[in-house]
Length: 401
Image (cartoon, rainbow, N blue to C red; front, side):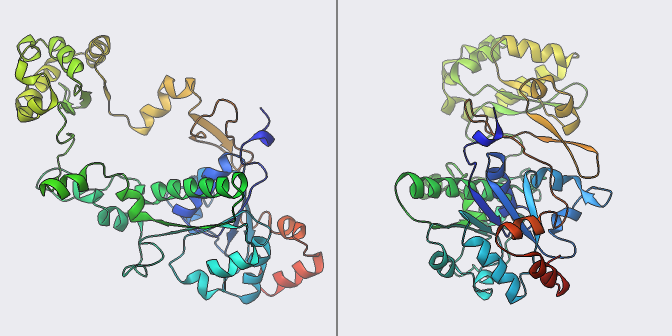
């Protein structure tokens, strides 16, 4: 299928954000056909270009995060740079920013100003604590948002320091919520005759939205869920179980019928047939006994592959804990096309996650590699009506790069 048939083909997005949250939202829209014009500061550009492992001076993370985007270098600290962005925003469908609240207002690009300039514009604003409220002005990186939303409190072993997931979940999940908000706003505008609107996506609220039963249980019972390590509190059995070689496997036997099959598989028909364990509430009351029985079996198995095959044949969800090496070597990922490869500007092939979710009729796709810094400045601004002499003058004065 031609990439021109992607669902968001013809939608123009101006991305002002840096690092992860706003750019991840823009990446998601670009994956499904939107034209994303990324505004970067002259000099180093988006700091993500220098984050983590670099190849010839550029982060390989950048290659995944900025695929299909165009790079335009504009100094937003200068009034004429702000004028350039306003000119682009006047013809755009979406503008994404993830600066501290008040920054866009300082630059003369508040929601009210941009809405007056382009009533069809949809503005996604991603921040740590939202655009208002007593903490709105506080810096809010992913780690802080994860803590404020209650996620970090639960991550870890009982009695030990909370841990993070090893990824910036607060940023990417906020980015996904932001992209969802953009899609809803586009639907309201284009299918229901509405205008543009502003989307206020806070990192902590995006994570708070995922906290399942935490608040309902507290509001009704006063219960404060505590860290539980690898277990799933209140649902049993579901845990990581040690094997004979010191590794772990995950086994989820928390469905009523699944639990019975699991107990027969591990040679414990007494537990399978115990009426007090027929349902989850009864199993939760005896979870330590059940977990001990399962781990006694997993520790006794000398062939982990055979053990997992036995669990699969019994219809019990289970699996190894995969590192990225094992993911890269796993046939299922390749068979589904979940891993793709893009040739970077340096010439190296960079593997990265493919486009998700997978749509049957209008799948997403990667149109081109991540841009070099300012690669599209002249082309994008020429299309916006800037002549060559004007561009040269703006570049001479440091407004463009």
